[in-house]
Image 1 (cartoon, helix red, strand yellow):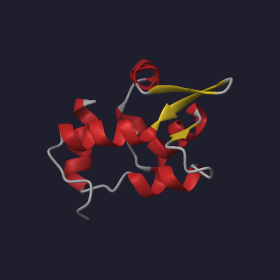
Image 2: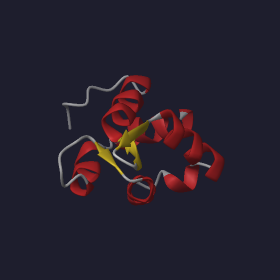
Image 3: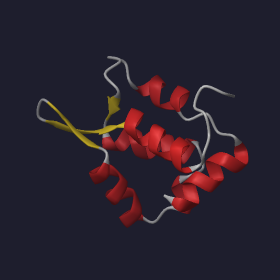
Length: 90
């Protein structure tokens, strides 16, 4: 997570819009494959090992019915907090 927070801060990345594009039900979570695609779009996936991505999915895991989703709101907040950024500022 250290690498991703510095990348987010350096590029002033806005994380929420890309995650929200995949969250059609507006429930604050997306599938693991969608989470992986967003990391790829943000160019963060290349900075993380497959094991680190699995750990992130486990850390921000959320059960939705029988699905095992990722709570992207908690993930974004944790990254913004670690990067000392205000999520509301562009």
